[in-house]
Length: 166
Image (cartoon, rainbow, N blue to C red; front, side):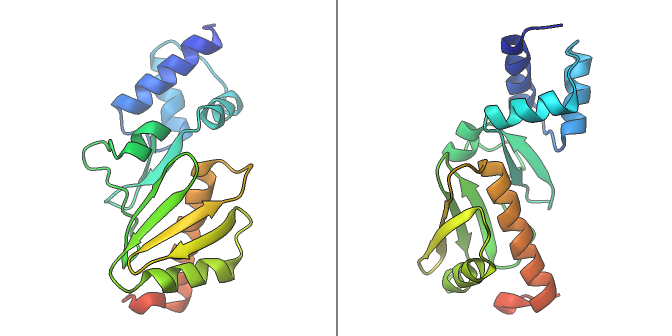
């Protein structure tokens, strides 16, 4: 069995050089490199490394290193654009999240997120086309982003908010 330091290095390398969209896929990639790890251990490693899961242009998700997501060093074809009309991107740094919207939609998005009272979100601040989301302490950024995408998708599906067309 490889050491934790070696395992972490392999996880980093795989995530930076591949489009990995699930822990199962990451487990297989690590196994192919001779790294045998349980899903529970991998999950803890991802949390410790603050790996983020970001939406891609095609509506899927991929894992990214936090510094790559924060600096905009996106993998080709992996723009942080969820499949939600009027939401152009969702990006995060290590301490906050920025949701870019089409002009005029940010305040509606922020108001709906505030009304949803997500336990992981402390506050939102809206401009004309940008929402700043400040997460509560103790939550992994990937978890907060996942909750935001889930809530915005739910609002779109259930209430046809923001002038979305089905």
